[in-house]
Image (cartoon, rainbow, N blue to C red; front, side, top):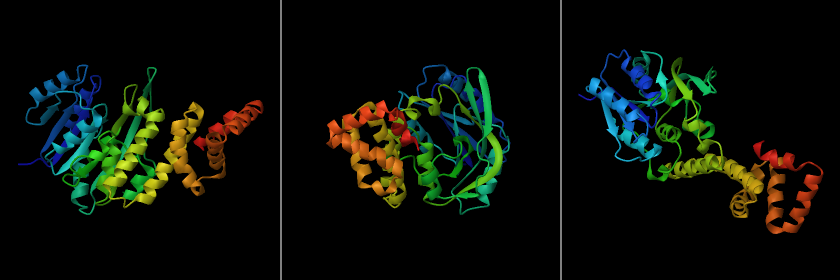
Length: 330
């Protein structure tokens, strides 16, 4: 008999947190069968040993998928989803945990009663661990009852991974066009939402933990790599959806191109500047007047370097350089 819910946990170097994540699932008071599928990606700490210990103690519930080599977050996430057998799939990262023992029961009942929805999510508490202190904030304060594919494309990440329950069989993992993406949850939501809406339960039933080793604190999300990764995801999703939402993705890709343009200008990277400039100049009308100033400045740097050098020196002399260069953030 297939389980009603497969709890999909992906983990890598979560020695400090993985036991709490698993325990929060084991504490669920469900009146249906569920399984825990754990994709363990060759952690270099004690994560695998902890998962193995839980599997020995709860062999009827836990199915670990121990990777023979480190395959990376995206492939591990995609493969673990494909290995889930339940009618529904609940997501949980190895460093997050659930706080309500009725979470699964509430979400299953909600989707059972709303067959037109493809998924549902709830509110979450976000904790940030820094310098020995922990701060917490509730994530969704004014979330609307239903979210569409347009919402996901335009707003991107607006709820925690540990809050989601979705119908299995609609999306079989992630497409090859997203194999090198830095994150799999938001692309998954976009792909799912092409088949229907997501419903919202206004209850805090999990904790989304941000810490020094979490993805949201990694260099992927805090540098030029962040913008390059987002551009890769936009292009991959646009293709996977058959370019049906080209206008929305185009708008987002231009915003990223503009951010990369500013970085290239600051880093004096003429090659990257040329690539980004081509896209921005061709769509100049979508930018505000301050952004256009920067784009024109970049054009001058490309075509009239001597004039740009003069303008550059004048800006420095007038102490306006940093102000002009900063408008990419606006």
